[in-house]
Image 1: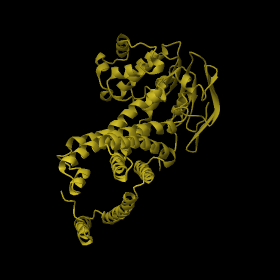
Image 2 (image 1 turned 60 degrees about the vertical axis):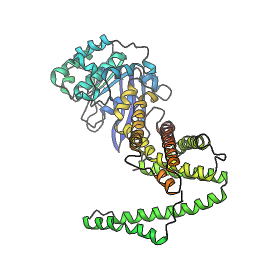
Image 3 (image 1 turned 120 degrees about the horizontal axis):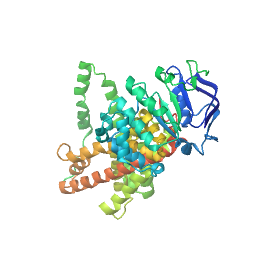
Image 4 (image 1 turned 90 degrees about the vertical axis):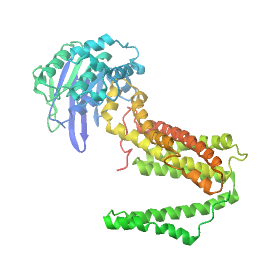
Length: 211
Length: 263
């Protein structure tokens, strides 16, 4: 369960959030909508402890996000954003490198699984041997999604993941994630197609107030 | 072999006479560098004269403690030059960069003087001050490139860094790719330069030694040893600078602190 309590945050003199409170149960869904620059990305980054609110608390599974648990709580979440920058080198090497991180070593690299996911997201099996820098924005985004899926985290934070994709791919990704019924999904988007999913929605608007 | 003859003051002025060409060109083509050139040439002349006077006394007294102290002063100026040339804040970086120079250059300098040269008194001014200056001067550029590259790419590719953190990387794991890139950027120009040495460039130290009366055979051996020593000092200084400064540059959440760069 994720709970935001009275979150206030200003950036460059602009108040993005004013005592925002919202609660998402485990396995629940939340759509954060609003114009660009209204704080959607900031809100997602706050959950990861990349941005700290001026006021208010964030609770993840009952623990208040703070200094002593931020690194552990981050590992409950998977984050994909728009305009990914992943790095350089071969896709497969990158995936292996991520799975060699100290906290990911319990996950075994299985090529079959990666190939299956590539297929699922309409990427060719050759993608695995390609260089990250050769990939288009849309391909990179899907590779980033695949990496997070391998980590199998309980919470997914999807920041405008579909905005750069064409319609069939948008649908594909939305269907995939809505099919993960036990995962908590927090999606930021101003893409109309997410609104059709009937997720509980908060609007960061253009003045930062919530509704 | 004979030592190089002294250059009389009139002859030195003749060298300044060469500046007529670039100044003329600058005026003619409106390059606008004439003023800068006078300032730079003036600073260079003043600094070297002061250094000359200082060296005369350092050599005359040849006190080990004084020599060590002077090397520390040079290290401080090298750090200062790194800060000025890389837009990083003095407050956060001066101490870690100084410490890296102290360890990196200090170690290589002692190794060079005792093992490579094998002089009895390794703290003598001839070795401490001169070799120390060579190591610091020649590793300066690489350090500037390395440390600027590191922090600027973390800032520029912040999404990449945050993505790695979100994938469960520790701070060190997420910083490793940036560290690799910065090291390569720092060392590559030096490697390229090393490979052309003797063909494209006759290095300054060697030229100086030959003019000073050493045989070319001795001069090349010194040159080879000093190039290797500079490379080692550079590698240690850059990597330690990045390592030590990283400990202060990020907050407990692993986020790059604000205010690391000068405006």
